[in-house]
Structures are given as structure tokens and as C-alpha cells.
Amino acid sequence: MKKVILNVATFVFVSFSLTSCGSSIESDAKKSAELACKAKKAATKGISSALSGDKSAMDETTKLTTEAASFAQEMQTKYTNPEDKQKFTTAFLKALNDCQ
Image (tube, rainbow, N blue to C red; front, side, top):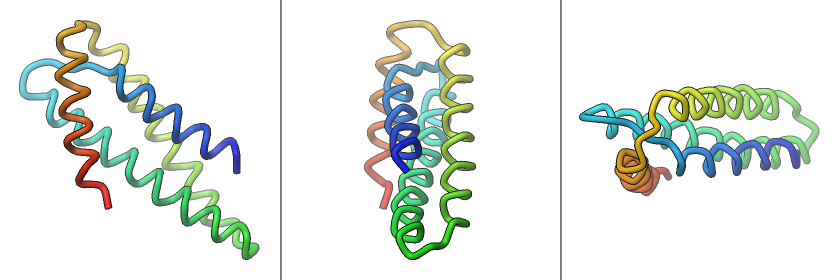
């Protein structure tokens, strides 16, 4: 359980350092925020389900966290410009605000 929460937190941290260029900044940031949101929701559901003995929600959390971390790593290697990092972070935070 701690590992899942740590993975979600790591993904969010890595997402802040990601960059992008051109119009893909918004789409990459949106996808990153959607994955972070899904992983967060799954982690919350996984914790409550694990307390009741259901392990399937934890499997879903692990899957989403792995997917989010993989995408974050891809974005980190794809974009390296500090100016684009700032643009990405701004777009990511804006998209993350829509997470409910």
C-alpha cells in the first residue's frame, strides 16, 4: 500500500519536471494529468478495498501507476528544454485541476 502511494507521488513529482513543445504541450500535459488522476482515484479505491479484503482494486492501482510512471519517463526523455518544462508544468497543473 505504501508502495502504491509512493508511486503515485513519484509520478506527480516527475510530471512537474516534464516538458513538451508546440501544441503537444497541452496534449501531453492533459494525458499526464488524466493518468495521475486515474492513479490517484484507483489508489483511494484500492486502499478502501484492501481494508475490506478485496485485492483486485490494488491490481488496478498497480497497473495505472505503472502506466503513469512509464508515460512520465517517456516525456522526461522526450523533452529537455527548461522553457518547455515550465509550459508543461503550467498546462499539467491546469489539467490536474479538472481531476475530480
